[in-house]
Each structure stands twice: as C-alpha cells, then as structure tokens.
Image (cartoon, rainbow, N blue to C red; front, side, top):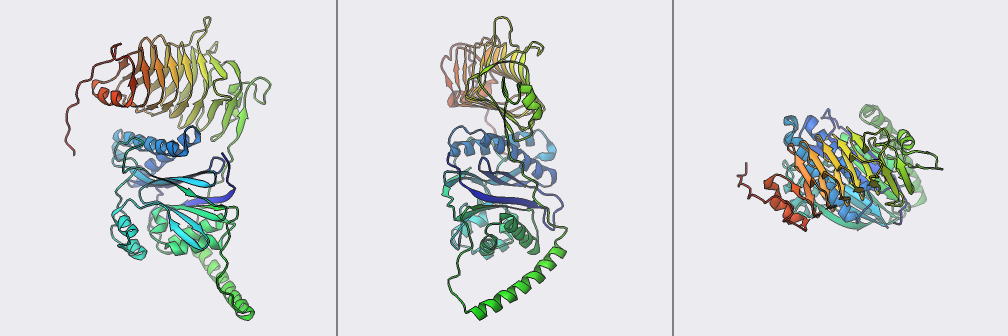
Length: 513
C-alpha cells in the first residue's frame, strides 16, 4: 500500500446545551483510519453505542485483510450487531444506536463508509463538496435541491434519520444500510468529517473558508470550527476531523487589489482579528476541550535473539494500539492477551504455540478484554503435551484471524457476554468441540474452515446466538438451536449434512411490534 502524506487533527466538544457528549472520534494516521460517531439514545445509551461502534470498527480495520471496502462493510456490520446485542441485554440501553462516517486512506484515495447524517466533505481549489448523503427526511430533500442548505439547517425534522447503526440486525451486503464510496484524496485537497453538531450550525461555505484559512494547521481549523458551532448556539455535541494533503493551501484570490488598498485592508482585518480572538478566547475559554494526545502505535518483536525474549515480556511492555510480531519458531508459554494489543505471527503460520508446562493446557487466554487481536499463529498439540483449550475467551472482544488450531480438546472456547470475531481460521481434529460458545454472546464467525472435530464443529449453548457467514463445515456436527439452522445452511457450506447435523425446524412466524 502506498501511503499518502498528510496533516490531521480532530476534537469533540459537548456544546453549550448538553452536559454529556455522545460523539466519539478515532484517529489512526499510521493505518489511515479516521472515524466520527454520533450516538443516539440519550445519556449513557448514546455514549455506550458510540463507544461500542468505535471499538469494533477500530478493531476490524486494524486487521488489514481483505479489500478496504470489505473491511469497512464488515467493521460497520460488526458494530451494528454488537450494539443491538448490548441493547437487548440492558434495559437502560434499549433503543440505543449511532450514526457514523469513516474514511480509510490508501493509494491517493479514501474509501468512505457512511450511515446516517454525519458527513464527509472534500475541499479543493476553492470548492467544497459533500461526499456523503444524509440518510434522513430533511437530508434527502436537501440533496434533491428541494430544500436549500439554509432551509435544511432550520428545519424542525433535521434530527431525524432513516438509517442508523444498531437498531436492527444487518449483514455486510444488506441493501440500504452502508453507503460506500471510493473518492480521490489529492495532495492539494482536504477531507473534513463531522457530526451534525457542526453541519446543522455552520454552513458549508463557512466550513470551507475555515479549513482554507488554516491550511497547514488542521488543529487551528478544528478549533475554529468548534468555536463557530458553539457561537451559533452549540445546541448539540460537535465533532470535527480535518485531514489535509501535504500540498493543501489557501486558494489564490481571483482579483488583485492595489497595494495601498491591500495594506489598509490587511491592517483592518488584523486589528479586527485581534479583538475578536481576544473576545472569543474570553467567552469560550471554558468550552474548548483540547484533543487528547495521540500515541503512535508501535511494533514490538518478541522471540529468541529479539529485544523481548518471550511473548510474555513483550505483552507486559505493550500498550493499547501496539502490535507484537512473533517470528518463526516454537513457543511453550501461555499467552495472556491485554486490551488493545494485536499479536501476530510474522510471517503468517511460522510461529507455533504449544501448551505451557504450568498453563493448565490453555494456550491463549483473554479475560475481560475490551479489544485485542490474534493473527497468523498455529496452535498445535504434541504427543507429550496435550492442549485442553487452544484459545479461551472470557467476556472478551478479541479478533482471531488466520489461526490454526489442531488436536486440542476444544479449539476455541467463548464464554460470557462479549462478542468476539473469528475470521478465516482453520480449526480441525479436536477431540471435543472445534468452537464452543457458552453464554448469551453473539460472536461473528466468518470464512472459517472447521473439519473433523469429534464433539461438534461448532456448539452454541446457554443462549448463544452466533452469526455464521461463509464457513466450511466437514465431518463434524453442528450443535445449534434448531431455529438457527435454515439461515446457517443458507449462508455456509456444509459438506456432509448427514454426519450429525441437526435437522432444521421451521421457525414460528412473528409479528412486528
């Protein structure tokens, strides 16, 4: 992937009316990920929806497998279904959802995923273009030019949306869910992502001028726009992200004035600017919340002869956002995953994990982890050291990708409420279950190869409701609630249906509430 050079900044502010902030943002310049989320649901519910969306989208986009479009579709869908699951499990969160816009930069372009009425603008050569559509009754009328921008900003229904993330279950390719586009990101252009707290208060022409005035300083552009939204009323939370290409600059004026007139004009504007800046600083001194410091993700290398001699030593040093690479070799140690860290074999399939002598036969453990990643490892049993469980996840959201588990008693065991992701793994020849899910979780399980496991290829018990998509099952049974089987058969490849697969019972019809 060719990286584009750019400057960036982002911040979120509660505004002048609301005490809490249901907006969220995420900036990862190293991977080119920029995200704005606007929570729906009021108080803790909206904040929780935004938190879940940010966590799940970040975790999926950091795993750089598949095309950018595929990654964005899967990321937003995972966030959607996790928000819905969380809302069903907590009465206080009932009805929560969010709207969002995410941009993934690569090779001089930006792949944009969008649901709702947050926005992405493209600014270049004195022009601003709204690249996303508002999925709302007012937004559709504005896009069709039935309403002007000013009329739309004043409309009493401007806060309503047709689409959101979290109110109903979705699959990645569902129509009328995710708006997806690839747009140019030229070196002399800028992108602006925002919640409607900005676009409902500040006209696009003012947004354009603020970004152009602060060419070379996206931090100043973000500050100016948040101040402008608050000065216009600050009726909503406002979040702004500005990404400027390395050649982005203010446009050259079309007309040249006389030197005397130009000098006088500049002096007058300078004086006015000083006065306004002083006044603005006085009145908004308590409103501005500076953006949090951004820590650059690191890559730590663990293994014999490396800076960290063991995987455990690297995990102890790692902080959220870091990646630990493990070179080829065999590792007899129990791996305990921390939050926010990705652990991967480099190259893939070269690092082999065995059971640790004092690890109770569990090779990889994650307990109460918000987000982590495991990628590319082979987890193999040996004649002299059996494996009880290849990967054990307890109340943890972990993305497990391209991992092989061979010969364990249980390949991957998921317990509790969290909803991890299993993608493109090979789980085979286990003496009991290949994948065992215990408890009311809804893990996302896609594109896995699950074969020859004696107990069951996949078992879901205790209220578990896994989402199964494009998996291959062969020579092992499926232990699933009967009502799930029609959808499972439709979306997955079952090569030996006669070998113990439960027969489906047609589900009872339900009325919409």
